[in-house]
Length: 491
Image (cartoon, rainbow, N blue to C red; front, top):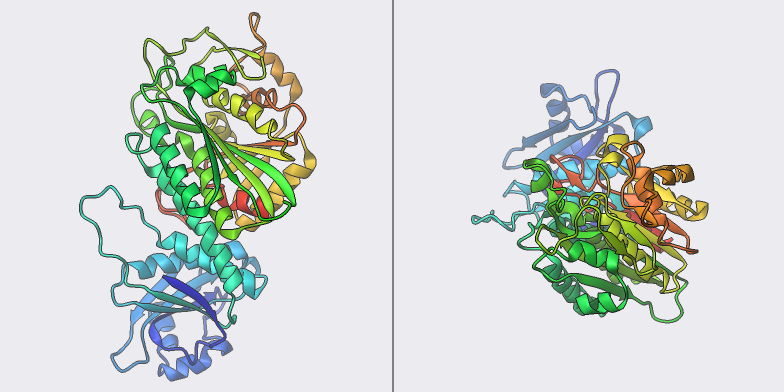
């Protein structure tokens, strides 16, 4: 599918289908002046459809009408935009996704024109439409025996905004990163495991000319990564510590690290998860790693003047006679000791050694991403990511990036006194604290493995997965927060 901006107006455009946006009206909805010429060209069809379908312009409202054989346009798509005062770039992106879903199953539509109100600037309008179209259009059918015919839609023209190649390229790269992350998360654990995840990242490195260093189990032992290897011990598959690097030509403007939790399957270990949907969904426990490498794909395409290190300690958390037991003590690579009081709090154990490794690279900031705690879902629900940081500037930079991305974050407190709940009588700390404030104590645990570098922790346990097709998301992995990470790097 090719998306392009055009200075052409709806009145002059010709193709299979045209989508027109209408703000909600408190009185009878009428054709706005900007569309009267098109309505006349179509012999008043737009006005007729509004009346016959009682179209109100409410947010999410959509009407598709087939026009006569002699009409210059074959299908008319009316889209409700809701309250004009609430129109925004996020609303524009969602509207484009709804149009994409309406068009992708129609074999008669190969060209689609969009006439939608500008949000902020013409460039941002082009970017938002691009994101909405690609993400709304996407459907993951890789594992079905009967494949659908590919969608017929080939060309989308955004009317009335002029040529916007840079904005469309940015939106396209962001979507490619999101889709790569979605596919990693959606793949079951017999398809994506530590070995195949490393192979996928190796292919990414080869495609974009990125540096790649994969630490094998012996390398991790030599580095003293006892926390990571404690989690990996029970699996029959070897752990892979993945370090991917993007370096710009010339001197980088800044140097940062993104660290993603890479549990390709989490049984819970000896604190086994109950049977049912909880354990069946644990292929998505590597959503942090997926977002990390999805961001890497987008950044490699966009080529910013920033050096970025993408890191994930990838493993499974399984059960065997070799596995860590409740009560075991692990020693992380910074020498700190951890009493394992819950083998199902394993993600923070892998992140501990990954954070120590990242700081040794001499980066200016570290951001970790993890499907870490159910407590964060209880606190913030399925749509909002928890953000913890020991640095106000970094927290603000992520918040600003999230606004550009349209992904929701809420900064949570690093309440130091809650660390009391992590204290162990026999080790430096336990890996879990009391039930109360569980997402905060998880963040405080991670903070123990970053000494001086500005650091932020993103708990994506809620928004990493969607149970339904909604907005720009299809059911399954969402690719959250690839777009925020990329905007943060670009800032």
